[in-house]
Amino acid sequence: MKTDKLTKWSNMQLPNPFKKVGYGIAIICLGLVVGQQIVGIFPEWARFLLSTMLLLGLLMVSLSKEKIEDEFIISLRSRSYQFAFIFGLGYTLILLPLVNYIADLIQGSAYSPVKNDYFDVLLLMILVQLVFFNKLKRCHC
Amino acid sequence: MLKNTLKVQRAIKDITQDQLAKQLGVSRQTVNSIEKSRYVPSTLLALKLSAYFRVTVNELFELEEDD
Image (cartoon, rainbow over all chains, first blue to last red; front, top):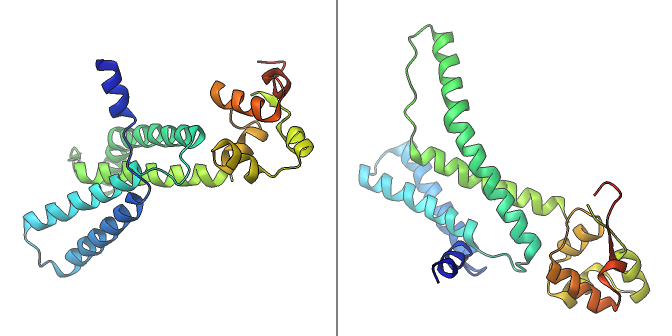
């Protein structure tokens, strides 16, 4: 019974039209986030809300089914999640501290540990997943 | 990867990848990837292919020597 529920949850996907909705939300939020960086009129809570909505929009795209969702697409999707997960960990644990260390070395300042912003890491992971998934699909056309 | 005779079977039936994909309810990319031995189909899809072409799975798919 528990295994059935787990399987059901692990296969959770949204219908295909949600992909367009997700892209719409993500583009609007991205526009507002970029605008905010230039103009800077939104309060802190609104910036947090926009960042969260941007991630949720991209998550919606990521979870939406393709028009024909078959076993091959499912295998490409799982490979893209695997790649994004490893890339995210590699970025957070190796690349970011390394770049920070080199930058400190060049500037001649003392080594300062990096503070990881979860938004950056999550955004990177989800973008890597979407780009890699689309790239894999195009490779097999 | 498995060798397969999908392209030959398709030529015998004179159907395109797209037509075969529609018959099996999969995408054209799936058919193309199987044909080019870049993707090994599930047992279910292999059986569907075998039923569609009226040949055995062993006639459709063959192990490579190094498998």
